[in-house]
Each structure stands twice: as C-alpha cells, then as structure tokens.
Length: 355
Length: 259
Image (cartoon, rainbow over all chains, first blue to last red; front, side, top):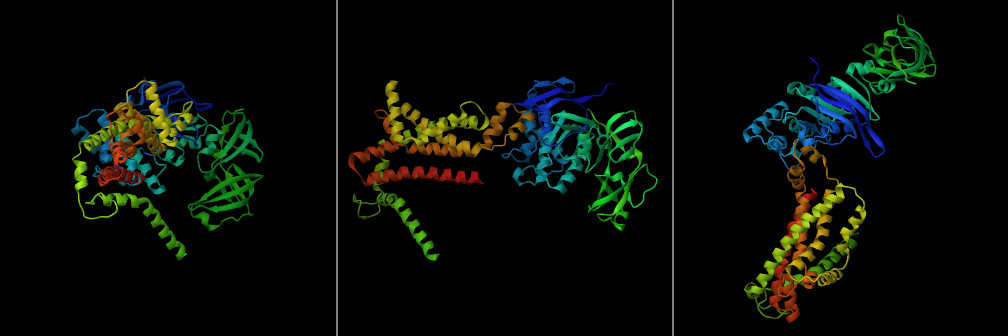
C-alpha cells in the first residue's frame, strides 16, 4: 500500500516583484502528521502556508490535497482550516457564532451545528463560554476559539500560522502540549508555521527547515538536531553549536586549524565541517578515555540555571561546552583557567560543504 | 498661575456666549407671546402652532427627509466603494483620486453650486428634486468617503481571509464579515451625510426648480419676505432641533467607535 499524503507541493514558486519568496518548494506531508515549517522571518514559510490555503496563487507548481490537484481551486472550496497569526476572530460575533460560521456556510441544520459546536468546545476545553463576546476572553481562550472554529468544519488539513506568537511563555508552553493532544484527538494533519524551534521541536512529527524560500532539510526533530544536512541547519537548530571547518583526507580523521579531529568513519572525502553539540563536550583539568582532547583557556563561565556554559579558547577558536548536573556547581572554572575539553569520536558530526 | 487659569475660564465662557447667545435668544423668543423680538411678555406656543398648521412647512419637511434619505444611501454606497478602493488596492492615479475626493470639501459652496447650476443648464436638465439630489450627492460622497476611509486604514483583512477558509465566497464574506465590522464607520458617515443634506441651503437654492422646497429653503424664503418674526424663530428652532438630534446621535456613535 502506498503512503497517503494529505498535502503535496510540487515545485512551488512564488515571486513578489523581484523577490522570490518561495523557490521551487516540494513537500509531501503525510496524513495525520504534525508537520512544521520552521525558519527565520522572511524565509517563505508563511507564503508556503498561504499557498496551501489558496490565499496566495503560486507562479509555478502544483498544490495537491489528498492527491487531487487544487492549484486553481479557490480557498472557500478547499476544505482546509486555518488559524491565523493574530487569530482573526470575528469581532461582531460571540464564541458560538464564531465557531458556527463555517458550519453555517456549509448549510448544516441548526441542531447539528449546535451539536458540533458543543463537541468541539469540549475538545478545546471552552464549555459554557458560547455566549461570551470574543473580546471578553483571555489570550489563551481566544486561541482555543480560533482553533475550534478551524477544526469544527472537519478540514482535510489544519494550517496554523504562528498561532502562539502573541501568548506569554507559560501559556505558550501549556498550549504546545495541548495542541499536540488535540491533534491526536481529532486525527487531522496539522501544518504549523513558526520561527520558534522549541515549538517545532516539541510538537512536530517532522520539520521542514526553510531559508530564503528554499527547503533546507525535512526530517524528524531528532534528525534535524543530530543529522543536519548543511551548515545553516546545524547553526539554526539548537541553542548553540560548535562548528569547525576542515578537510577529510583519510577515513575518520578531519584536518582542522586546531589539529586532527576524530570522527565516525564514513565515505566522505574533501571539505567538511565538524559539528559538536555543547552538551557532549566534557570539560575538566584532565580528561581521559575520549578520542578528541584539546587544551584551552576559559574565556567565560555563564551560569544558566540547570547548567554552566563555558566558552573556551582553543587555538583561536571559541568552543562552547555545557556542564550539567550537580558536579557543575562544585568547581567553576574562572576565566583564565587552563582546562581540557574532549568528546568521543561518535559525537563529531560531519557536514559536507558544497563548493 | 491662578490668574491665567481663571482668565482662561472667563475667556472660554465669553467665546461660548458669543457662539450660542443668538441661538439661545432665537429659542427663547420662539416661545414669546408678543410679536416683539426685544421684550419677552408671556410664554406661548402659538408660533409653533402656526408653524405646525402650515402645510408648506410639512411639505418642505417631507422633501428634506426623503432627499436626505436618497442622498445618504447613494453617498454611502459610492463612498464605501471609493474608500475600499483607495485603502485596499494600489493602482495608477490613486494619489490623484485621493486628492480629488477632498476637493468638494475645500472649494466654496457658492462656487460649487453655481457650477452645478450651469452644468444643468448646459445639459438642458429641468431643475427639481433630481438635480437637488445629484448636487447633494456630489458633495456628500466626499464626506462619507473621508469618514469611512479613516476607519478602514489598518483594517485587519485576515478576518476576511478567515471567512474564506471557512467556506464563505467573496459575496458572503462581504455581507457577513466586512460590512458588519465596518458598521460603526458606515453609521457615522451616514449620519454626517444626512445632516449635511438636511441643512443645506445654498446648493439647494441654486439647483431646485419651481415648487420644490426643502425646510431650509422655506425658512430662507420667510426671512427674505418679512424679516425676522416669532414664527420664523419657532420654525428655525424646529429645524435646529432635528439637526441637533442627528448631531448628538452621530457624536455618540463616533465616541463608541473610538473605544
């Protein structure tokens, strides 16, 4: 049996004047998947979402919903749900009327509309607020109304355009878990646009990372974190990263400006970058039993709560190491102290550099 | 400090007295029993009775109302289209169009009235209610557009897009989302347009034909005929209170919109 794709984009191109906002984007999004489009602002993620919704017309390429070409189908006939960045609740309607709007457009009988609205209000936990005006609701509640309004029409796919941006941190963290739960409950494909990697990493089954209108990598959260396909993804994902450029001449060894770095054996030869995540880097006066050991001088030690971030100078390159756990508080290396840092060769990740 | 403050207070009172004492005098003497405009003898409603029993007044009032209604409706529809065009789309000649909207507000009414009349004569159009209405609309569109445009700048169109994603076509979106959310602006513009039409004298004077009179025209002809009389006072007070009601209504909706 072949895989069912709820949304397929084939070579989508969208230009605004001289700017190419979306540059030959092709994506296959699986049924019931929580899929994120992640990237810095202006990377084309919102435009891509609006093309799926039919709110923008692509200059080239095809949009398919469940295998059916909808490129020329207007928005209101696509059966998609969308949650907008600023929610876009109807200010002249109460909660019930907002949520019922899509069902009214579908000309459902009054009784059924009532039943459906009640059901969705239970899912988003807003029971009993039907008669409230939308401006009487808190930010988190408005968020749920917007979600309920888009979900009640039972869309083939739900598009979310940075819906948590306006909420403060605590509610946002809560809503992330909530969204994922709702997605499991309603069993709909969610396509989620965000510039916040925490949101994308927390909720997504797969993430497409975009930059300058192009898709850089499509992978699971684990995949984009540990197996970035290029330098941009490596430096974009994660809080901090160590990247050293060098060259592989023999298998398993990279020649860099700070010396040779051991890495897993693989069949790449030529110019590469070695990526080492700060949390795998050990730091101590003397290190034993790892493949890569370098001597350096502490530049800064920053207390970050659950860990200490060290910036260590090694032959002119600043290395970042995160020291976690109880031990981190025991002795803090002050700037100027000589230390050793080290990591296992399996923690060196090789990223090929295209020339 | 204290001196300047009380000076400001007194100055403000004087300005308002200057502005409103003629109107207050007119109101007071409209209830005067005697014909005198200088000595108030006794309270009486007889001048109002005279006005109310005058069929000319009723016909003029009726004319003023229906002309006002037609003018308001037309100005709102055209003004809304204009306001939407300039706030939503960019097209060549937009800046020129936007300044042309303001011209009827800026040029002297007498010049506008004269040019209207000359145009009607040139086109060989018989003067009457139709020419009066066209004249009023030509001028009220500007006000309606300006009021509505001010409210539509920064209108968040994502609510229209939200309606589209929920299955509403363009027409349904316009009538169920756009129009209701613009209602306060439309109401304010409508009340302004109606008041302007209801109060207009000069343009009506130049563009009306024999026999067709609005309320300001009747007041004007009484004044022209016999100078000031208590009957004229009460008639003016009557017209004033109608305009006043609309003005209050308009200010209230504007204040509600501001919130």
